[in-house]
Image 1 (spheres, rainbow, N blue to C red):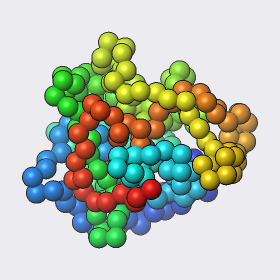
Image 2 (cartoon, one colour; image 1 turned 120 degrees about the vertical axis):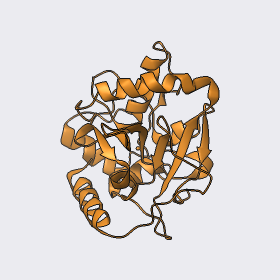
Image 3 (spheres, rainbow, N blue to C red; image 1 turned 135 degrees about the vertical axis):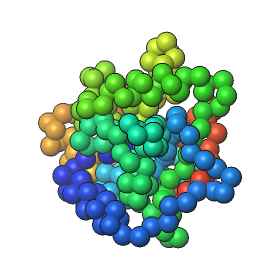
Image 4 (cartoon, helix red, strand yellow; image 1 turned 90 degrees about the vertical axis):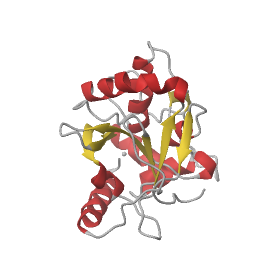
Length: 228
């Protein structure tokens, strides 16, 4: 809910700057993050994030380009398991939240919590996610290549936890700019560099689609994502 070399460099630079700066790390007074919560993020990482946000719609029209799952780290502290350009890894919650801030200096993150009938899946899903730590990032967005992009990781760990039955729905992917009906130039450049065709119409899943799932309750616990 992570790239062209230029976009990646901009993103990493932004993370470094934000990580060293001051930011407001607070949630709603009546909200406490829990293991298994999904963190939907409106990233500001350049052309690729903008291209993702053009073709996906998030909860209440929010722009989400990334998602991770909250889990306890080796020290019992809440962290985020996520698939980023370097692969599947565990990131500190502070680092995750500091990546992208709204006008009030709050993380552009909302939280999705599984509804009660699905919460029993959380321990197994987290175990599956940790087992995938170190797996490569899925640059070509395929669901069957043992590499993972951010929303694919979330999709896959809950599918495995639910006896191979998905709880989130994959849909045909599109890489076309809705304003022109043509493949977005950022995606053309991206897939051209990988020397693979644009996977238009192939099954996939995105952070916005997961955020709209009926199995989740959404909490605007941190900041305000950009509207569509």
